[in-house]
Length: 115
Length: 117
Image 1: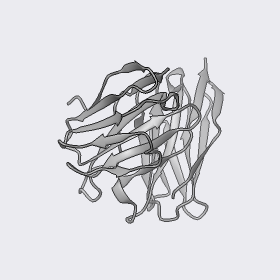
Image 2: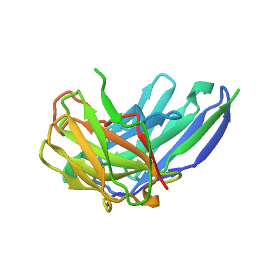
Image 3: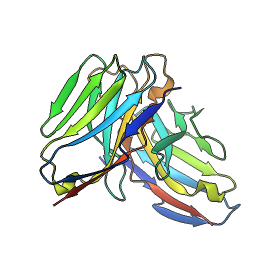
């Protein structure tokens, strides 16, 4: 089955700096890559996603890049703010043959933005 | 819309006890999922359902059972709880693949924290 590796597991940045989280996946048929943010005591919430036919997507301070050849994708947060402190998860969804629209999640990255 | 709701929010069980976790969604989603979240291990799929009356095993199904008698509800049961089942449980739902103009993303509930002593 699909395997998703996420790095780093923890990331500490100064407010205003950029943060980058990287994920690799194993199934070349994977075609959908969402990123989730989980605040303390809450469920994960989608912040951005990208499909395999797109190389980059941006939404204000957040951007995601996808390299299908290398099978990796990254989350970029610019001008970080204290409210960006959270755990971030990457995920991938297999291709058409993947049953149930299932997502495979990375292990998560705890981001701490220091004022 | 309330989205995805889960009850209870927190529960303490003794080894061997049973319980049922309830997930409800009001978005008319076909697909529903149960995950467990353990420190450093991300989210792991326990069971899922692709529609009313259907269930299927995920990555870590042992020790759990599920039922989807109504489209909006997905129940997760622990017949004989073990300390290894101490975790945070999340339910999620999504639309079916191919729905035009509908995002594939999964929407998560707030979680149930379970402690098995």
